Image 1 (cartoon, helix red, strand yellow):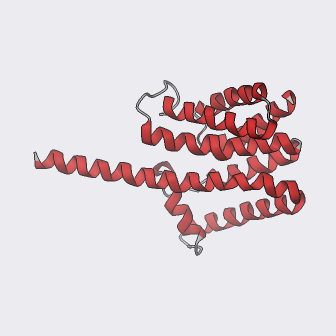
Image 2 (cartoon, helix red, strand yellow):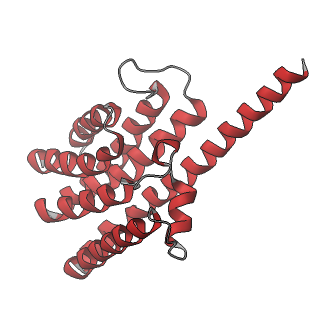
Length: 205
């Protein structure tokens, strides 16, 4: 009996730790919602700043996996890393930066804003909802949940409607976004979501 209680305690602690990591990681995602505002006022400086942050991260992470800790950056990476990323180069921030920069370069301001906000809120909140409330798993998606996908859909719909003020555009973008997010892409959804949804929005607007 004590053994099973101890096992349940260990499992509960693991889930709580995983949820804390996910919350911390997705807080970074949500913070990217400020990028469209900065792009509106200063596009080139903002792109340079985002790209510089990405390059700095790559250098810092390269040092970290070789055993050389970079103050703050290495600590943040370790705190946010998933179990699958342990002792590996954490690719998520790189694809996040690439997705934002690509969307801003490829699409007009409004469409890029929709793509970036979809990444910030759709992908950001989907994982949190899935880990917190997700009990129904979607087959062939490597653990994605119905709760996460529904949250992603509604978050993207709201973000797209806020920017476009067009319900049909918001609906189509949200449907495409929910489909992309549910694919087992690992960290590459950070790249595809802003680019694909930004392109979808530009086609429709």
